[in-house]
Structure formats: C-alpha cells, structure tokens
Length: 110
Image (cartoon, rainbow, N blue to C red; front, side, top):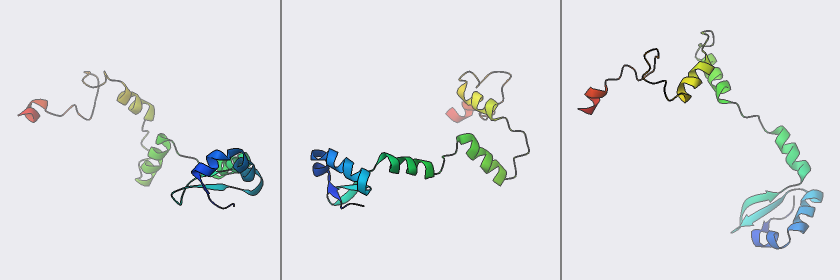
C-alpha cells in the first residue's frame, strides 16, 4: 500500500494515483491527516465485492428470527402479510384482521 495522499493532491494528480492503485495497491486519501477514502484498482474492487458477505433480505431475516423462536413450522404467509401492509385500504375492511382493529379510538381521544 502507498503512503497516504491529501485530497487536494489526489485531485490535482488523479491519473497518477489511479495508475499507482493499479500497479501498487490501494492509495489512502486523507483529509486533515485522517484517511477518508481509498483509490483502488478495478481488480481489487471486484475481489472485495466477491468476498463481501451477502446482505440478507428482510424475509430472510424474518425467517431466521422465526427459526430462533421456534416459529418456522406455522405456515406464516409473508406475501399476504406484506401485501396487507402495502394496501392502504386494508385497515378497516370488514373482512380484515389488523393489529389496530381492537383499538378504541374514541376512548383514546378523551
């Protein structure tokens, strides 16, 4: 890895530092003597991208938590649940069950 380079110097000599990153490795960029960024080669970037852990989707996180609590066997329908959250007309329909259906709005206003 190269010595750290101040932002203004990297801006003024960017092609040089890009070449340096391609040939010698990442180039740290500093602002007020603190590293704030790196210039890296495409190959280094692709390698980092491949080795980075894949982020889990919301459904995967929910499934993982349900397994932790022993709830994976209850046929929970994620599609229906998320559709109910997206559907603005869902609340208050006679055929719906919603977490706020039992809430007494008149008593709350008193």
